[in-house]
Length: 351
Image (cartoon, rainbow, N blue to C red; front, side, top):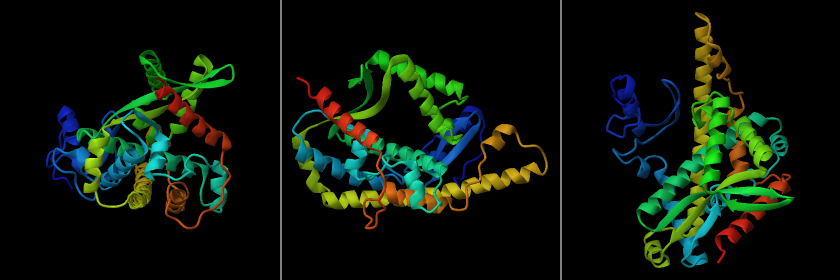
C-alpha cells in the first residue's frame, strides 16, 4: 500500500513513524504495543501530507469547526483573561458529545437496546471514543496555538476529601510526579509497556480502578482529572472569525455529525480486523499451539457488535437526532460535574 521496502531495527521504527513519501504514518494511525509489535488503529482514506501530519489527514475535517466554535465562544463569553475548562465540559461545548456521555448507568444503556448492547460493548465504546476525542481536541488546540490565537496548557486537578468536604486543587510538580509514578507502577503491575498496550489488552477499566484505589487509600484523593487553561487576545480573535464561514450552530452540528460518522466507520473497521485476527488464530491452531498471551488477547466480537456501537454513538454522542430514549442519569456523576465546574471557576479566578 505504501510502496515501502521492509526494514529492520531502528530503521524500521523510524520508517513506521515517518511522514516522508512512503512513511507508514502518512497512511495509518499506528501505535507500538510491545517489542516488535504494532497495532493499526485507523487506515486513512486520504494519506497525510508529507512532513505535515498534525495539520492534515482525516482529522483535518474537524479543525475548521472546532476553531470556529472556540473562537466565537471566547469572543462572546469572555474578556482577556485565563479561561479554564474541564475536558468533558470542552467536549460538550464543542458538540463532540451529548449530555448523556459518561452520565448514564451501564444497565440503563443495555436495556434500551433489547439485549443487543453488552457491558463490554459500552467499555469498548468509551475506550474508542475517549481516544479519538482526545486526539482531535489536542491537535485542534495546537493548531490554534501555532497561529497565535490562543495559548493553552493542560492542567491536572486533584479532588481531595478533607473531612467530608471536597476541595479541588491544581496539582503541583511533586503531585504530578506522584501521579506519574503511580501510573508507571500500575503499568508494570499489569505487565504493559505503555497505555496503548493497556487499551489493546482490554485492561482499561481495571487499570484506572487500580489507580483510583491507590490514590484513595494512600492520599485520600477522590480522583484527578485534566483541565485546559486557555489564554487569548480578544482583538485578534475578532479579526479572525469573519474569515471562517458557517454559523456557530452549523459548526457544532457538522462537527458532531462528522464525529458520529467517524466512530461508526471505526466500529466497522474494528469488527473486520478482530474477526480476521480471530479466524487467523484458529487457522494457526491447526498446525501448532498458539502462545497463551496471543490466545488471551484475541477476542471474537459478537455478531451485533457494529449495531451495538452505532446505538451507543447515537445515544451518547449524537446531538442531531430527533428520537431519544429516556435513561436514568447517575446523579452522583452529574453533581461531580457541577462541583468540578464551580471549583475550576473558584481556583482560577482568585485575586
